[in-house]
Image (cartoon, rainbow, N blue to C red; front, side, top):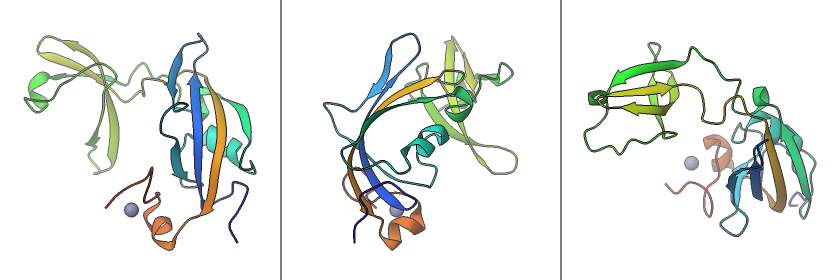
Amino acid sequence: MQPTTIAADAVVTIHYQLTLDDGSIADSSFGGEPLTYLHGHGNLVPGLERQMVGKAVGAKFDAAVAAADGYGEYDPDADRTVPRSAFPKNAQLSPGMGFHTEDEQGHVVPLFVREIKGDEVVVTTNHPLAGQRLNFTIEVLKVRKATKEELSHGHVHGPGGHHH
Ligand code: ZN
């Protein structure tokens, strides 16, 4: 039996549009490739993942997510200035660009470029959308059971997912 509504361990295919409070569209899959994700494994921002639960194939709905349940509140102390030479020479740096680094404990920390000032780069752990309310429009296209392998990896394989 394949599930028809969204619950933990389902593989879910959606179209989504993300609109900010100023009316600008930050991201949209409508008219392009839909997003396929493994539900219940932290692959969406927490406030959106919670509102997906129980939705059926064909459902189209709006979901507003507070900053704290989205990309986090804006932390003004999260900016650091590092020399440009800390990055690979050929890296094309631009504001909003994300990458990963490791903290002293070896945990992976996402970092974003905030500003480039000559030989210095301001990086921040604030996500570019931190502090913003996220207004999603979601359309549920497909729901299926995850395979054992997908569950052990915590992500989707095949179309729209990882290939490895
Ligand atoms: Zn995998």
